[in-house]
Structure formats: C-alpha cells, structure tokens
Length: 222
Ligand SMILES: NC(=O)C1=CN([C@@H]2O[C@H](COP(=O)(O)OP(=O)(O)OC[C@H]3O[C@@H](n4cnc5c(N)ncnc54)[C@H](O)[C@@H]3O)[C@@H](O)[C@H]2O)C=CC1
Ligand SMILES: O=C(O)[C@@H]1CCC=N1
Image (cartoon, rainbow, N blue to C red; front, side):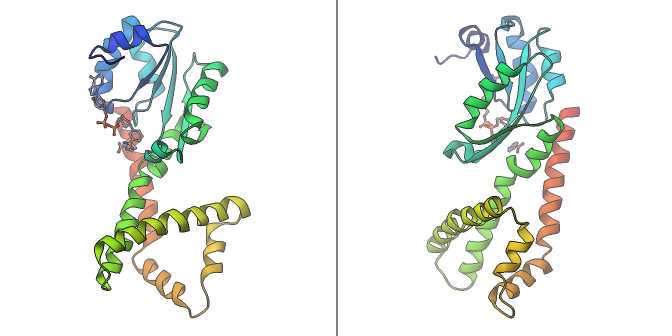
C-alpha cells in the first residue's frame, strides 16, 4: 500500500516502523496515536528519540521498540541494536529480531547503549567512507588516476577490512595484537602507522564516536 496518510498505514499494518527524521517524529506520533491499539508493534529507528518519549506520545500499553540500524543493512551486512519499551515482551522482541536479522548482526541491549551504537556504528559508516576517500586521495597524490584509486580503495575495504574483522572475531585477539603482527620491524607498515599516529588517528576516531554518542543523547533531550 502507498498512501500519504500515516493513520491509514497504522490501520492497515500490525508492525509499523517509524523512520522519519527525528524532528518530524513527534508530529507523526500525534498523527497515528488515535489509530494505535494494543495489537500493534511500533518500532522507531529515529536517532536519539527515547522509549520514554515514544511511549509518552502513544496510548498506554502500546508495544514500542527502539532500534538503531546502519546503512550496510541495505546489503545485509549491517549492525542493529534494539531495546524494548515497558509493554513490549519477548514475542515483540522476537518479531523485531527476526525482521532485522536479515540485515546482519542484531542484538538486544539496554537502551543506554543505543546512543553509543549510533556514535560507533550508525554514524561510523560515514567515518569508514572518509577513510576510503582518504586512502584513494593518498594514491592520487602519488600519481594513480582517481577512478582506479577509488575502485582499489573500495576493494581494500571490502576484502582487507572483511578479512581484518574476521580475524578479530575468529581469533578473539585484541586489534592491537593483530596490528602488531602486521608490522614487520623496519618495514612499510610501521612507517605508515607512525604517520597515522602523528595524525592522531585513534584519538580522532575516539573523539568522533564520543561526539556522535553525545549528539544522539542531546537529541533525545530536546
Ligand atoms: N541514514 C542512516 O544511515 C540512518 C538513519 N537512521 C534514522 O532513520 C531516520 C530516517 O533517516 P534517513 O533515512 O536518513 O532520512 P530520509 O530523509 O532518507 O528518510 C525520511 C523519510 O521520512 C519521510 N517523511 C517525512 N515526513 C514524513 C511524515 N510527516 N510522515 C511520514 N513520513 C515522512 C520522507 O518521505 C522520507 O522517506 C532518522 O530518524 C535517522 O535518525 C538510523 C540509522 C541509520
Ligand atoms: O546522522 C544521523 O543522525 C543518522 C543516525 C545514524 C546515521 N545517520
């Protein structure tokens, strides 16, 4: 069904995803509130909007869940965390988990982790694109044509990061140990890593995760 009426969607569907921009959501909740019943499962993916706020706008006893996906869900390799509201039970959590598991990793967590997941992974996809852009531009600086550099940077992320991530998950080793294994004494990697340290890569990425988390927390307050 395609319609301009949010109320009609709620009347026609039992499971409803709220996926507007966060500042639009209060208006949408007001639109649908009269049509929401105890039979509905309402799932919000809006950054920062708390379960408390969602429940405040909806009738008492509404089954509400809050989820935070990320862009790679589109290609089934995303990461989703979710938390349930006061009236959502195991059955509603199972429905969401079944739906979202098709998108990749899907974990139920305490609600307080959702803003952190937003800073880490929801927004984190953008940090990785910036890294891909920077890798390609480094190669362009050294004389490689841009098209080829971007293609190789994308493959570098696809193959190397997938492999690198698999190594962390399958060996259970800390990333620092695995990075050390790549650094041949006096070799290319330690020279390149030295430059990344001079640019404060790790501190900058930590700051980015912190900034993303705090912004999500602030959006929940306003
Ligand atoms: N883009 C991302 O990677 C992620 C986005 N989110 C959250 O998802 C939500 C949507 O973000 P995007 O998809 O990026 O935005 P978007 O702008 O692409 O999508 C928003 C959608 O809301 C619709 N819309 C606007 N006003 C409406 C109304 N009054 N009633 C019904 N629908 C309305 C628009 O037609 C549009 O399809 C946001 O709350 C964001 O925090 C969460 C995780 C990742
Ligand atoms: O930038 C944002 O607010 C949304 C939430 C996570 C990804 N995009």
